[in-house]
Structures are given as C-alpha cells and as structure tokens.
Amino acid sequence: MKKDNKIIYVGVITVAMGWQMACGGSKPAAETATSNIAPAVTDAKPVAAPAPAPPPRPAPIVIDAGTNIRVRSTTTLSTKNNAAGDAFHGSLDAPLTVDGKVVAEKGARVQGVVASSDPGGRVKGVASISVRLTSIETGKGPVAVRTNTLAHQARTTKKNDAIKVGIGSGIGAAIGAIAGGGKGAAIGAGAGAGAGTGVVLATRGEPAVLPAESVLTFRLTDSVKLN
Image (tube, rainbow, N blue to C red; front, side):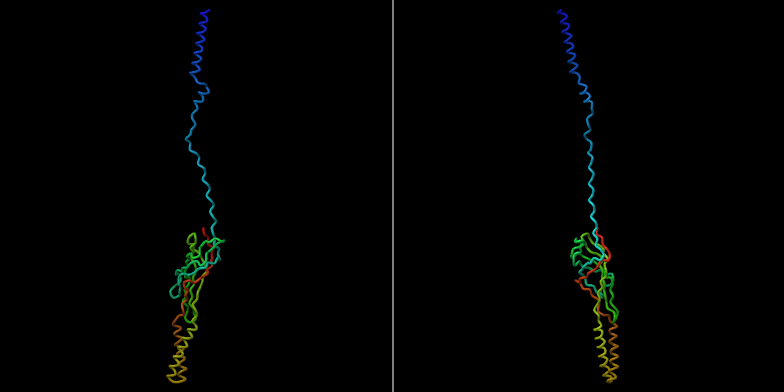
C-alpha cells in the first residue's frame, strides 16, 4: 500500500510540474495575438487647412463728368510767348471730393496744355489764349482727365488805336497849314489820318496774358475711374 501511494504521489508531482511549465512557458492567446499587431504609423503629415479667401476688392471711385475742378495757375501764359501745345501748370485751389471722400488734396499738382494761342488780327482782332487740364495728382497717383477749355482775351485797343489815328491827323494838319493855309490843312489832315491808320495796321493789339495765381474753374467732360 505504501508503494502504491508513493507511485501516486510521484505522478501528482509530475503532473503539477508539467502544468507549471505549461503556464510559465507560454502566453495567453489574446496576448500573443495582440503582440502580432503592427504598430500604428505616427509620422504621417497633417493635412493643411485651406487658405482663407482674399477680401473683396473695394469698388472703384468714380469722379463724374460735370465735376468742377478749381485750379490756381502757377505759370504765366501769354500769346506773345506761348503757342498751342505748351504745358500749363497749377495746383488745386480746393480739395477734390467724391461722396464726401477727399481723392485729391488742396494744393495737389495739376497739369494742362495751351489749347490755342491767337495773337489776334490787326485793328479789329483781339488776342486770346485758352487752356484745358490733362492730369491731376490724386492719392492714387496722377490721373489723366479731360476738361472743357477756358479762354482769356486781351483788352480791346480801340481807344489806343483812335489816339494813334488822331495824332497822325494832327501832324498832317500842321504840315498842311505850313504848306498853304486852310485847304492845305484839310489835305494835310487827310494825309495824316492815313499815316496814323497805317501805324495801327502795322501793329497788333495787346497780347492776351493769363497771369500766375489766376483761379480757374474747369469742368470734367468725361468721368474718371480711380482703381
């Protein structure tokens, strides 16, 4: 009986050792399955957020046709010295505004051109000179413009012409009187008047002069868009 118990005891010990080895030498199926899963990729690049939409462009500013532009000239122009096509310079005498917003400050530079320069005909003709604007310096830079034309005429010289003719007549009368009395005086007066008229015909009247610091009001004939 003791021998049989010994055999049973050895068998139990053997089974227990086998179970311990089985438990310590292998991992549970769940743990083994987990260890076989590939690690997640962590170096993927993040997706860039879309760029914000650009703000809408502001609407262009429009200076309407018919707008008055007050200018103070900085150069003297004359039919004696200037011809059509010569440059004309000045500055704004008042700010230029659109819907209450100033687009060109007072004192901003303006440029124009001599549109015509007529020295005038002899005796009847009067000299005249005209100008118009071509550009204005605005907050967005120089802007080309089209305006009406402003003309300036010389003073009439009819009184001066009459004095010249009268002087000629007086000289002629004096010469006639010396030559032979009343009849000679009449002839001399006629001859003197002719001589005086000849002086008038040989000379032009006064030139038309547009002095510096003249204040001129132009009017836009075409609308101007400021981008």
